[in-house]
Length: 312
Image (cartoon, rainbow, N blue to C red; front, side, top):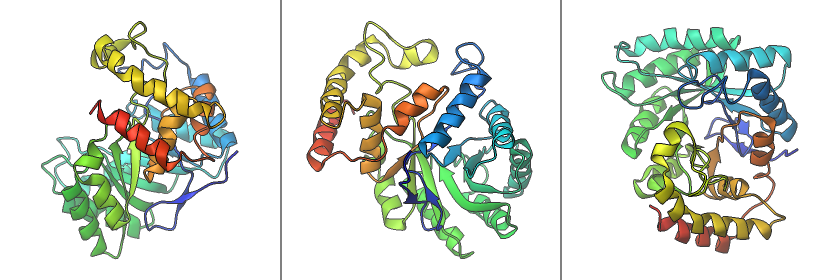
């Protein structure tokens, strides 16, 4: 069990280096919840995360939809624990103003069965509501004690700066920006998001940190992923990824037989990000947790960068 923590932005909240991603919890469309794994599998994943020292879970109102939040609330009632909850408000087309955030937040609080969410995030920066309107609504919710910290997700560098500047008018800090970021997706390093977050003291939360399983070493050109993932990560793509997987396995051996998943997550930690790998059973949580408590060397980081660059 790790006791290692890192700061969540400038909020004073301390989080474990990795969180538990709960997108798979109840998602039937992409992850086929209920057919490939059960509620008991997910409960075991939650229990394993507590045992490993993971102290925060990331969910959202659209995961399930609503099912992920309900599951987390149920697990916390069954096993009270000091777990930080991160959830998200989705800017549906029918949410025409920042005032609609209040209804979304109340719904999440009800499904989770709590009076306050530790990190509440805007899921996307979609129009028609301006970023400033959402941040004003976030600030009001924080003032009322309904949320502890404010984050965003999928915001560009410029949008992150706008959110940060507007919250500062209320004396609040933007805690985080949750973005897709992995060895197979280095765009956040190229488009200024990572640099902007570093400059502003905003934590980068990395979702899909093992690229929906592609960096785990499980999938090969002869064993492609099922469902929608198979269309995106086809045989040709997986053939191109194999040299990177081979390097990850080689590096992992020098750190006590660490798995490719653990190397991929540790690489993100070394970049200053907080990855939230999804998990739908205890075995996956235990593998993910093995990314904590050690660090890749500078030379290993450079080698992984160089091999990853070939796939961008």
